[in-house]
Length: 555
Image (cartoon, rainbow, N blue to C red; front, side, top):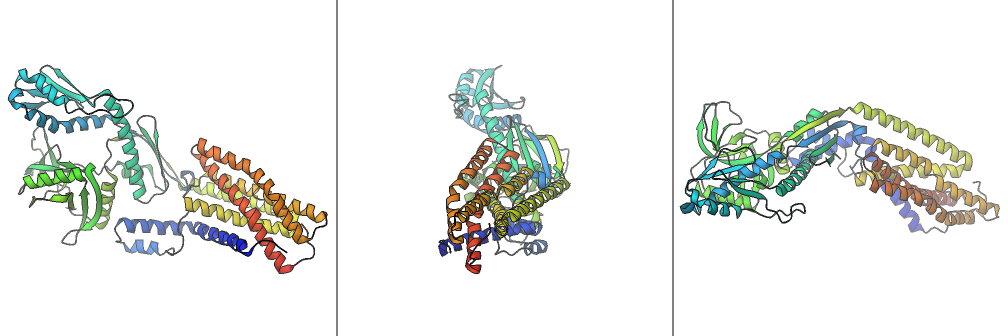
């Protein structure tokens, strides 16, 4: 009755079974989502889990697939922010960090330039006075030697700093080419840090895009409010290590020009006067993990890169017996006394942390500090109610489309119409399975694409069934007519679907946002519908023919 090899039929049913298994978690969306969030939180905490997290983890078996289709902002609700990166802040930080290098460079020619002193100047400008005006040219030459070429195409051949004499003083500031390059780096670094920070706390499929020269669009589904997202992104988590000048209990203590007064994190009556320029900063961290100190209290272990490890090791070797302030966002976490040389760049941060706080601090340190302050120009929250209404409308549209398609196919082709409807159900399961596996975000236009695919999915069945009718009218037996119908209709099916698939591919690569969401679901739907209409329907028909062995069939 059928010339389909057994292995091919088994392969078809195996693919359908996999589609159903991988699509099934979407039927239990909330339970699986809570399970996944709990697993992510437990992994981030290094395996330590609270009772609530363990309970959420048990909502879905670990041995079953647990990937679900991420819902877009329009379906799930969430927060929308448009941020402007204050790139000018980086200029001041960069120039301020050059002062130790300038001081060291001029120290080598002190016999010619005399004493070296930093003078007050606007942000982004370094002014240096020397006591011997006759050595000004030598000083300029030494400072200019600190310049490095700008490696971007915009500033090819330019230096990163401009050095000039002004009023008998040396003035250093970033060149225009370096400012352009710095702006590019700052915005790109901010974008990547935001992406890592948002992803590490368990949210799914955020939209983080650069807009213009200094703006970033941030959209995160599942966040309760724009204020919550701002709090998450605005946490700088800037870790620095400073030499301690002295300790005081007076909040009004006067400090020097290159010193800063910082409070202790857990006390309001203790302050540290530290040198403004840090010995090493969190930018040179390569890893940070939650841990426990020797007393079993939560802490954070950290590891510096090669440059940071050298600075850290050299300072600890030369300052044994002196306090060293560990500063997080302008507050001193702790100020331990250096007991010995600490090589290797590995250390531990202790303090009054809970397990959750140490885990969060480790996450933020791994993500890195934002290189510049951000101003939020636009913020809004999309409530989940709108998403629920959209999903409900999409479900209703899908049900109506399925009902009409099923009615038409059964009315037109009888039992073979039922086979087509069963293949359509397998098609929908495979669409959601593929969306789950590849992590494609489902948006409202994506639902429209699925509904459209459901209407188009039976086109191939119509072509096959009409071909079978022609073969039956020509006097062929049921088995031969079915073989000819499926075999000869395949080329027509491919031709009819190829144009739709090509259109979906073009929309995906040319379009953005909702257009791409529509293109993804439509393209996947076209591919799965060709498979189910041709192979799944044929597999069902083969089972029917082998079971009933009819002498005649009605199509």
